[in-house]
Length: 640
Image (cartoon, rainbow, N blue to C red; front, top):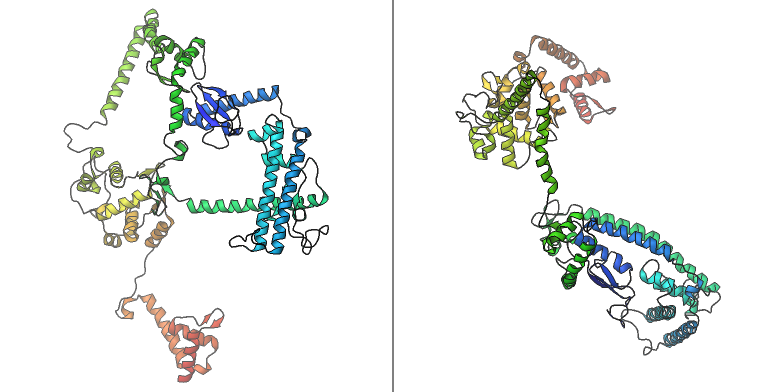
């Protein structure tokens, strides 16, 4: 963008050079032009809020960010085509700097020898014991720190010798691929190999390999690789390097699964947290997790690196604003009659005619205070031309009359349609759209239409009665509760305003109680009366998602079948019918016949039959005699 202004440090920044224009470490973009620095990962992205891509998307929108990426990729393709980036073996050749690296490694070996001697002598002046560690652990810690520092210093010596112009250095410093550690290992020294963050100590008894002495603690015997990849590794160094590389492979495989499981646990723990309208973070049970989202209420996606406003960026933009007006004036002169993504033709013409003062916003889609619409005035001038063909080619009178009458009919229909929703002046019935909850409650639910009931439900609950073209279950439950709780009304029903109510036995449907339904003939009930009876008896709705529920259908089937009356406390013989009398007599005869016989002479089948006739229970359960039957049988045998 032509009005982009930024300042930041690149990966080539050096403290001795500072933020000076002209150095590669200082990226300076002023009014859309890069006047200093280099394009590296710090400037382009790397997920940082200070990158140019983040700034463009934040200030100009994602569409302008996409255009910038497309243009930048095209520019990079052209640059790589013109100037390739290659890397050979000479890119990691440090030449005479090898002597400096070897001297520094030799000094580290001497320091390690002093520490090992102090360990064997238990000299705590040279090797003071670290807090919470043994003397052996302290030695290993100091040696690891010493040897890692040697590798870092060797890398710095190699980087200083290679300079910033070598392709290998450009590749690592710009962030394209690799890092300075890889370059140091290729050119200077591979360094100490570690397994589980410790020097290599496993292998043979008291030594890592048979090539070393027993209990040898020197850097060479415990996995320090002195040579670089360019010079080549010795057999022992190669073996130690393979041990460290194998640990890296295992860690990669294990870390993938552990991090995936950690993410899954986090998702399950945080999935029900929601930011409410009061900016508090709550769970699905409305438990408060944070009284204010993030403790500051700032949306990270809409903030500037966590802040509401970036003051440094605003100051940089303000300083460059005066020169920006001059630049825009030059752009307008150069683009006269042409089009540009940031400067559309209407934008150029308006500025050239009225000056820069009409600019309201500079960006991807500029807005102008003065908007001309010459294209909209053209149809007004052409309007009378449309009537010309009617005058030049007049139709016969009959056809004209027909057309006019058709128009009159259409206009008459429109008038009728417009008058339909308007109530006559004499009608005192209020429009249900203007009614309140108290008006609905005073009018009674029996007098309301379906639309009025749904409007009442909307006002009372704040929810819609219709969802996906069907009545919701919540609305049906609410309506059933209103019908059950509404008092009986004897007022007449007005046609056109109140729905026609089905009557049963002289009562309105809404007025019928549970006793009325139980005393009525089930075969004479309508479907609405069946559903209301089911609702009053069970408290449930007969409809579920627009269809009759299975529970309602089973209930209706049971109610439709004739019900056998249970005997009262009166005498058994008076309440039962003639058929039942015969069955009871036969049963009594069978019981008396078996009971008069000697119980000991009865077969097992006869005993089971007698037990069943006397108690009404089965003597066998799961292939065995029940415990109650055995008790009964023993009592019978004792009595006989």
